[in-house]
Each structure stands twice: as structure tokens, then as C-alpha cells.
Length: 285
Ligand code: NAP
Image (cartoon, rainbow, N blue to C red; front, side):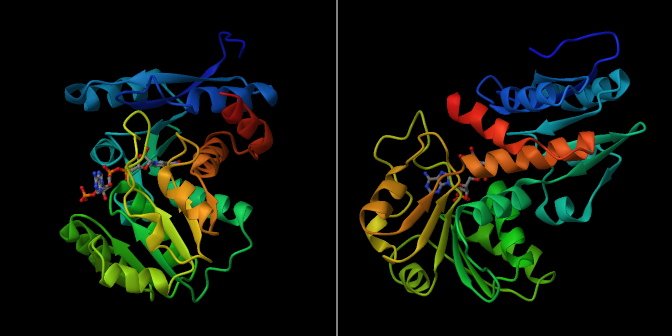
């Protein structure tokens, strides 16, 4: 347990719900292991009270906080400044209190890239990638893949309009070619056949509604592809299970969760995060 004293600085995660969040566990293990005088709290906030809650956190002098579903976009209007990457993504998952000024960042995309590099020795420069989904997580991931030099990213989403909005936002910032397709057979299958890496970013297949759901049938994947599903509960979605059975290399989203949190930790403390310990805490839970 972190020792709370009169000098302890406060951090937290705001969202609704937050009871399921693994961030308090992971961040407190990290803070405690380095003997840092901080405590990280769950902050469940009612939707109609978001701006009052942010004013309250500011008044209390919180050092910073993470932002999770459903506030990653809405929080922007409550902050003093948002960095360019988070503005481009259109979402903030990390806020730092810089001497009274609340500044927003987004560590999801860079957390994803760190996790990808840890999983596989896979160059992204000049590569073609398929991203399934076009929501908040996909925005961060597509932006990160484009910044890492991918030559073409195909966004496959149920709602094609949403994919087109993401394309329009990102295409003017990166030389990367961005295509948008729906999830049906045909166009998407041609893109899957041309891509080494497939990233699944939708909640389809996630606990507790996992069941047998999969965003696309795994048999549509190329047998030598790398398949990253950002869901980590269950650790192996039906998509990953099917992909593995036919020879693909697979990874779940635990590494992304870990590394986005490690980057937030580094923003708040200025100290390199104890990633090994944080991962161990997540795996034990
Ligand atoms: P979001 O903004 O609500 O986006 C959801 C996406 O999933 C949209 O593209 C949506 O498509 C699609 N989708 C949802 N239900 C679908 C269905 N039944 N069939 C087809 N498509 C469906 O959510 P998000 O913030 O991007 O989060 C998505 C998932 O990523 C969540 O499970 C979240 O827990 C996980 N996540 C993991 C990490 C990590 O660190 N590992 C980080 C962030 C998020 P439409 O546009 O057609 O509705």
C-alpha cells in the first residue's frame, strides 16, 4: 500500500465506470516501488458533472490524471491546453497539472507502438496495415502508424462515414495513403491480402459480452500476418484464437494498456516507469 501523508500528491483516473479500471493497481504499484510520494485514485464522475469535477480537481491541486471512457473527447473543452498529437487524435487520455495549467496529452498511440515493438521485430516504414474500427482507440493507432511511416493504412469500419472523417483528419498531416472500406467481403479482403499487420480496435469480442463474437472471421486473414487485438479481456479473443490456429502471430492489448500507462507515469513524475513490475501486477490481476 502507498503510504499517504500530509505531503502526498494526488493522481487518478476519471471516467464512468472506473470500478473495472486496472490503472489504479498498475500506477500505485509503480509509485510505491520507486518510493514516490504520490497516490493514484479512481475518480468516477457523473456525465452532467464533468466540468465541475475538472474544476474541483484543479482546485484540489491534483498533479494529473488519466481520462477514460466516456470523457476522452469531452475533456478537451475543460483544459487550458492540448498538445498537437492529442488535438489531431481528437482525444485526451492524460492530463498534467503544470503549475495550475491543465494540459492534455494522448499516450494511447505511442503506447500501442511501444507494445508492438516489444512483441515483434516488425518494421512499419513503407508497410501496409489494416485497422479494424474507427473509434477513439483507432484514431490514436492510425495516427501512430502513420507517424511511424506506414505507406498505406486501410480503415475498415461498420460506419464508413466515421472512417472517412478519420481519413480526412489525418491525411493532411501524414504522407501515408489512407483508404476506408466497410467490413464486408471483397474490398476488405483485398486489403487484408496485401497487409502484414492487422490491428483490431473495436470492443467486439470483449468481456463480458465476448461470447463467440468476432469482428471478422479469422479465416479472412492472411496466414503469415501479425494480428494485434487491443482487447485484453479475454486474453485471447475468438479473432486471436482463430488467427493463431491458422498460423498468424498474435498479441493482445495488455501491452498497449501497460505502455500508455507507463507514458502517463513519465509525464507526471519525469521518471522512467518500472514497466516490468507494472506488467507483473497486471498479469497477476
Ligand atoms: P469507441 O470510440 O466507442 O469506438 C468503437 C469502435 O468499434 C467503432 O469503430 C465502432 O464502429 C466499432 N464497433 C462497436 N461495436 C461494433 C459492432 N458490434 N460491430 C462492428 N463494429 C463495432 O471505442 P474506443 O474508445 O475506440 O475503444 C474500443 C475498444 O478498445 C474498447 O474495447 C476499449 O476497451 C479498447 N481499448 C483498449 C486500450 C488498451 O490499452 N488496450 C486502449 C483504448 C481502448 P461504428 O463506428 O460503426 O459504431
